[in-house]
Length: 475
Image (cartoon, rainbow, N blue to C red; front, side, top):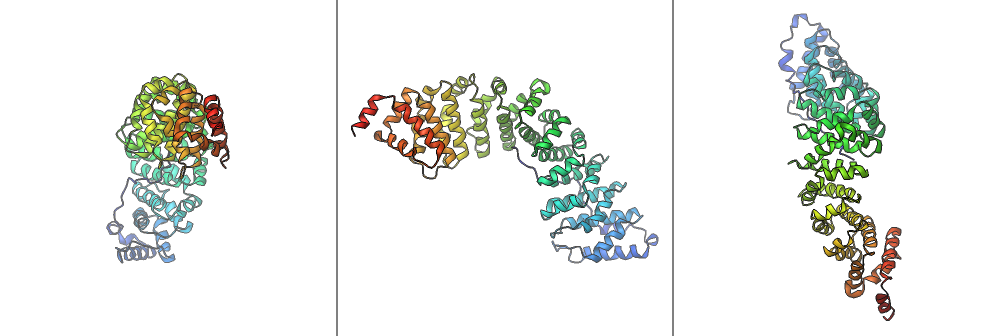
């Protein structure tokens, strides 16, 4: 799965409320409105450096007075006040406190919308986690989704940023889609503003973590949008779209839909992203390739489009997540019978041998051993033996302290396949002064059933060598 995007930059910074209320024509204000203005100004100006504000019942009444006023200047003031509070209010927001703010989101005045959309986005992003649930319960989704069609890029960006943050919880992911957010979000990806595209693709990415949402995104044309935006010049947009496609590609039918766009243009785009100078883009490109490589036909196509020449150097990356993603992709590519010789010819074996030694990276070790297993199953056992990989694999079983069960399972499975090779058997027989056989027997009594089974298979292969068995019987 791709990552969940939760931190979104807003596109509009509010001016302080005090500089705007001063322009309100006081003779036109009702007494209650004038009192509310005075009260809120004093409230914001006192302890202005205090980073922790609260909204008392009195201040909420003042905010309601301004928010529900027919005077647009007062509505702007209420929106600006909310935007200032949203940067300092650390306590959970309540539905009652959100009610006047949500009313402001329905305004036809662009300045009101800029400040109010910024405020609710801040409450979602910077406030306590419970704010996300409260905002949805307060019926803010419908006005936020409507603002995605605003004529203002700032409003679009803030509304989209808020939706992105809200979509970091499972329940909200479902609610957002049920309220009809997918079509306007997809339409917004066509806006020629990188800030809006970043927020929009980030929101869509978060929605892809639920299968029902993925199905609706595919039906709405999301695949084509993501594939085309892989060619964006913006690294964040590239990352979000590659991650979204990676999430979609966990389903076979969705992989077919992805490959159908532009006659498989996604492969070339992802291979290009794997050469990016940005770590997270390279990593996400590898993850998307890995998931697409779950299908035999894609495994062949990826290699024919230069995937190997980009993947192998990434095994030496300084970024641990990129290495993990690259070796996972290589593992899937190694399943295809036509790829194994190309993988060996690409000088992958020395890198894979080195990765096996990375005991602090158990996931890397799992994928590496799995790659050896796949290659050995496709007649590349001798090349693996010649590279000196047998002792490295065996050492993980011999000196297993701290080695996770998953690694032991993959390593023993690889050795069980390799043990069909005579040279591999000879090496196994000679390891640790000929004592490795005893280690294998001990593993047949392990609590790990798959390791038991695999080691029994290795013993079965070794038993083919009668000379070794006779030597053992004499001990």
